[in-house]
Image (tube, rainbow, N blue to C red; front, side, top):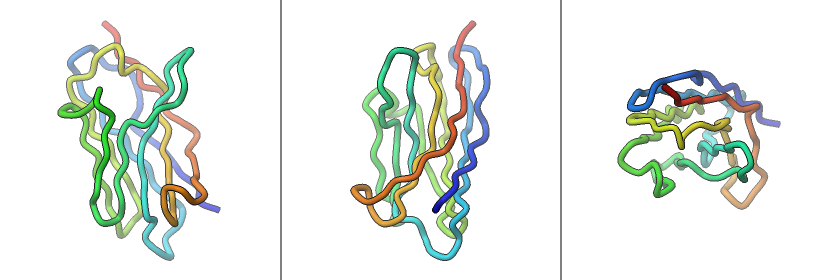
Length: 118
């Protein structure tokens, strides 16, 4: 069982920045993949960005060039730097961990609210 603890959400004005962090409880081995998904009201949960323990990344088209995902592999911690935020980025952001591959069992954090408004 892997537990994920998220932090860094909040309110920001359009054009602002936020940094999300997620730490996994697992420390015995390097988790294969970690990432962030988001769910806006009335919409399905969707991938924002993800990264493997070798540094391979994937981003949603809507965040490319604005968001950057990174991780501290030794600590199984993942970060999401979000710049140039707009109102469409408002959502609950969920941390995701896939210890043994994207198609294997995944674990989820409780979610952190990000609100972009003026």
